[in-house]
Length: 144
Image (cartoon, rainbow, N blue to C red; front, side, top):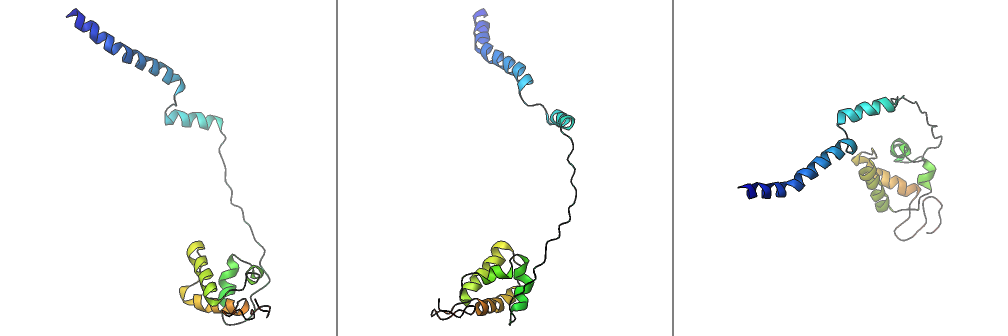
């Protein structure tokens, strides 16, 4: 019977000793509880204060050239783009402008109503478009 207890002591001695070592070292080096960490952080770190900032951006003074659809462009496109930026884009066909407008609506959240997309695509094609046959552009009247 004595041999049985010696065998049990030998088998369990290493795990028990390892657990004691881990507990002693861990209490010193392992992270403390969330409450004690919060207490330590509030002692060391000054509180962060946020204040509202009012930013007034300059308004653009240019508008899109007059035409059927210019109101849609002026109301929706200049929210993110200047008129000059739009007008300097490569000349696109109506279908290509339609794809660009759909991308702006779907990927970037442009607030253009779906029922105004066709009219806007036609307008943009009129002021900055190219014909399918490579004819003159509506902006510079030169062949592309």
